Structures are given as C-alpha cells and as structure tokens.
Image 1 (tube, rainbow, N blue to C red):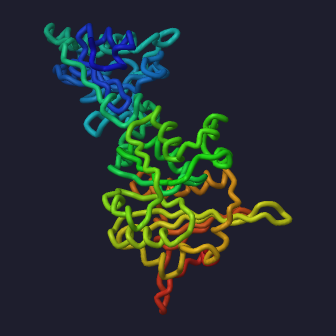
Image 2: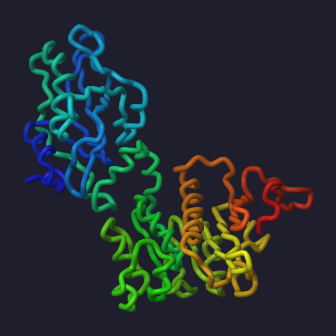
Length: 413
C-alpha cells in the first residue's frame, strides 16, 4: 500500500511507481527522477521529468498540457542531435523547487492528447531514455526508489496545483510564515481570512468574541445557511469549520484581544487588525509597535447621502522601523467620534472585500510575492471618485519641518 493518498487513488501514478519509476510529488508537480539521457557529446547523464499535476480532489485527471519539462540538461539522440520537439521558451516557470527548475521542455502531442499521466510519462521517458539505452544498455529509468511526496505534510488537505500550473511555486513559498493573526472577523476580517486561507501560512489565529449572526452573513465570504445563522455559533468557530475543510492550522480564539491576553500575539509573524475602535485597540497597536511586530490596520468609513453610499477605505501598515507615521499623523482612531468617517456601522460586502484585499496585497508585497514600487505604509480608497491614494512610501520625502510630503496623495487621510 502506498503512503501517498494521491497515489493510492490515482491509477496512473500507482502504475508509474509499480513499474519502477522514481516518482516524487513536490509542490503540486509530478517529478520523475533517474531518467537517463544523452548529451551533445553522446555521453549518458541522468535527469528528471517535470510537469504540473492536474487533480480533481485526491486523484489525477487527464493532463491539461502535453508539454513535458526536463531538469538536469538538454537530452539529445545517440548521435548528439537535438531531439524533435525541443522547446526552451517559457519553460523556466516550471519549478517545483530551486533545484527542480526546468532546463528545457518537449512538445509532443499525440492525437487526442495523453489520457493520463502514465501515458505522458512513459512516452517522454522512452523518447529521452531510448538514446541513452542505445549507448549504454544498462541505462534505464527504472530505479524502484521509494515514493516521495510532500502532499500530506503541508497545510492544505489537497495538493495546491494552482501554484504549480501558474509557475509561481517559489513566490508562493514566501507566504509560508509561521503565525498570522486576524483580530476581528466582521466583514473585512472574514474576507482577509478568505484570502489568507489560500496561502501556505502555517497557522492562522482568529480572535473575536462575538457570535455569527444573519447580518454578518450578508457581508461575509461564501453563503451561510439558515442553520448557520440560527445556531448561535461563535464567529471564530464558524470560520474555522468553513476553512478547515481546505486547510490545516486555522486556530480559533473566541475572545476579544485585551491587555490581559495580548501576550499571545508577541510571537506572531504578522497581525491584521479588522476591529472596532476602542481603548483595547490602542493597547494592541502600541504593544505590536514596541515589540516590532508588523501589522496592518483596516478602516471602513461609509455614509449614505442623496447620491448613494460614499466614503473611504483605509489601509495603514506598520513595520519594524517604519511606524512613526501612525502616531505622528493620527492615522488610526481609538475612540468612537475621534475619526468618525471610519466608525460608522454602514458596511457593504464588496467594500469590505476590497479593504481586505488591499490589506492582503500590501502584506504579500511586504513578503516579496508582488512587485512593489512605492512600498507605501498608508492607502486610502475614495468611493465616489474611485481614487486610490498612497502615503509614506518611497516617493515621500521630508520637508524642512520634518513633515512627510507626497505630491500625489496630500489629501488622503
């Protein structure tokens, strides 16, 4: 019996292992090691086949691409000539790990495509290994090594084939931080969780002392049932159950964060604040700042006027060594009425989602997942004009009084 659930439920992968291929499943890629090939000098070497897996749940489906990549060199025929179908453009995005990055690819498409991964691997293995066996009859791809897979060791309950198919596995691995905390699971906090749940963060801690009610359902991700809103379930428990079907490491804390339990945040890698104003918020912000824990605070300030709903969304970021802007310019409010445009109860799902996604975009930029030119620490989206203003970034400078000036965002508060 195979240790891998994916191989147990996928006949094509099981056949490859049984035939003796050295199969590995790494970051959503199928890797087949110990494939002999001939270089341009007709010398035998060994490399690996590499292609992203296509899955439906815990079993494979027919390969969506006929291309196969190769790691370790460029295979030739026994006379040192390039093998038909060799491609080099675009294959560099196929990378299971830095050591398993494609050196070249092959494009051989039979009529109707490949029915499964067994057919795809055996076709390309024969094409590449055949010339090697002609040079050295003992060279074959059947090493009968034990199966290696990382599928049961990560945070996800099924293999992340999206990252491998998109060629962003290396970037996605930058998001595998130890501990992310979300404080507040209202509309914005719930959407932050929805985005973070798809990242390989090892643990996502949820803090909220409130219950999940019907008004929450109308600005929350997904579709809550009548039973969900009638069951008086704590928000953290509702969302933990929702996302635990996809991933491990969602940890509920059915309490508010106060001075009494804030010590639980001191080992956090990153914190998202999506909570109401109040004295506890000041304690949280000051504690995180003093302890050099990076965080993002979100604010949604909306009102209804004759023209419809209007207002602003705010994303304020603090990182070690770059937090003075928050207190200096009063960017985060701590008491109702102090910053009224961010203290109203009027919220709308898509604006909560936008605030959450702006926060997660900034977070991913800080981790190097997205390109980042401005490296801003404060952003405001204005609803009626659709403008997005940034401050405290690379284009900011200090005037003679020490005040921060940004020519394109001076009116964004």
